[in-house]
Image (cartoon, rainbow, N blue to C red; front, side):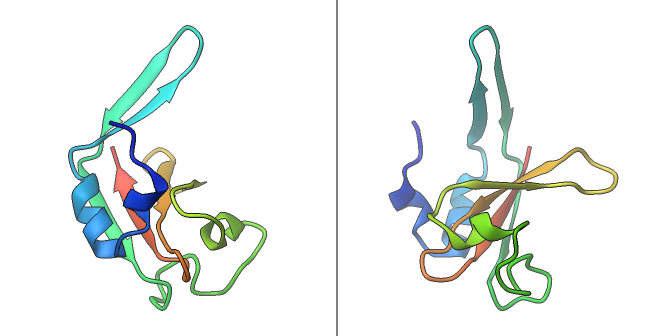
Length: 98
């Protein structure tokens, strides 16, 4: 099942919980890459740990747009971590790791 924007428009913590066990799939012409989401975290817009806390910047602008878009950033150590933007009127995010 492909998750729609309606799914991502739910409360941030609800979405973070429901993403557990889902698959993140990337389709290319000759190759499909997928991973199961095994961990999630929820960051509300007013949390100082959230990338949106500082306000809209060029780097985090996707967090202030339509819900359900990926915001990928570099982390030291593990590979790049996909982050799914959830906020409808505020830039909340759920971090998913696979």
